[in-house]
Image 1 (cartoon, rainbow, N blue to C red):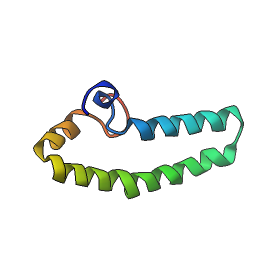
Image 2: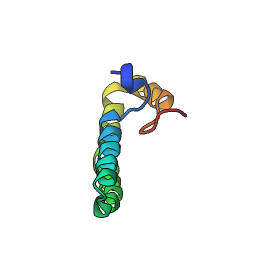
Image 3: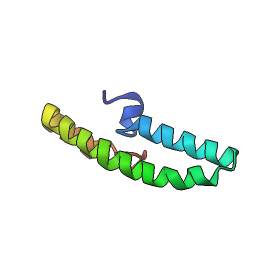
Length: 78
């Protein structure tokens, strides 16, 4: 899938969950949650995203490499 929200970010689910958790933490004044989001995001990045991208590059080859060059990993805009 390379259109829709995937045209703006390669990982919309991870971005959305992170933003939602930050919003919940801010609304309910959960400072501890804001602090834990950072290591959780780092773990997610290295344990899931990097490995997933390696797999997708092997599976789809140049098509995925072109997609990676066009679309940022997490945040919209280049």
